[in-house]
Length: 189
Image 1: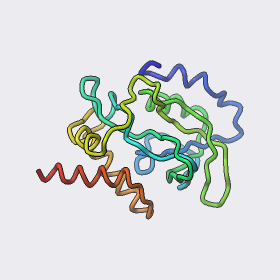
Image 2: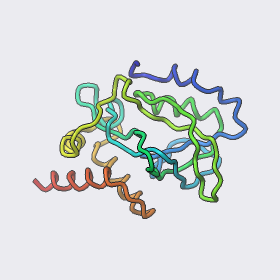
Image 3: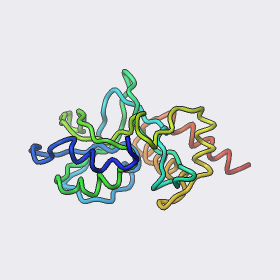
Image 4: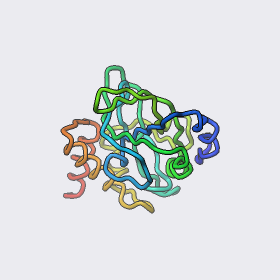
């Protein structure tokens, strides 16, 4: 699959068919929103875990030195905290561009805070995309993140802001927390 997934995403779901559209964000969208939305609330999905296995050639790295950003991997029994946004279908022009570096839109059940479950959309970068970096040791991932930056800033700031947002909501994500701890150690050395 190509790096730029915008054209593929436009063919994946007919957004006009949705009575209401909810989007689930599990990374930077928890703490930073750069699009218009109708409503927002903290939510979760089941069966997935965050992993820094996706390359970022356009935000937190460059084509020559990609950073690492989150994608989701299926893990039975996992619960992934995030933020749900009720949006108009027009916003996907901007979102498809924002998530163009290997992410595809998928439908997923989103558990909202009032015990309501909605069928929503989520962007996930699968192993078959050209920007996928894959699994590596926590130490290797932390070093790559530590040394990467791109148009959206230092790759490590993405980790720091996400970790702070998760802690603010009393959410534990060992993958994120371990990488953050290693990044702080690298800063001291």
